[in-house]
Length: 119
Image (cartoon, rainbow, N blue to C red; front, side):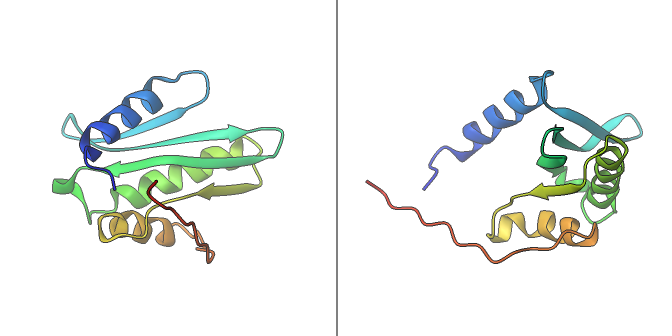
């Protein structure tokens, strides 16, 4: 469905991480190396925070970095007056580490179906 997904993902990361107006970005590092990051937005009117992107370098996964980034973002959201945190992620195997991290952070998945059709 996404033949050039690497380029598309790179463009999403670049856009999200350079939109200073809306996006809040926190980076995890170990020994001076960026190991992961989380990006979220705040909707002050709705009092909701939304995680836009969470990524942990494959060499550093399963070390609690994603969970720590999630906890940090949730603490920052709460301190900013947000009442609900939301996010969306893929259901494919490639997103399984992110789903585990979100569940560890206390997020609850709701049943949802989104349909697509090639035209």
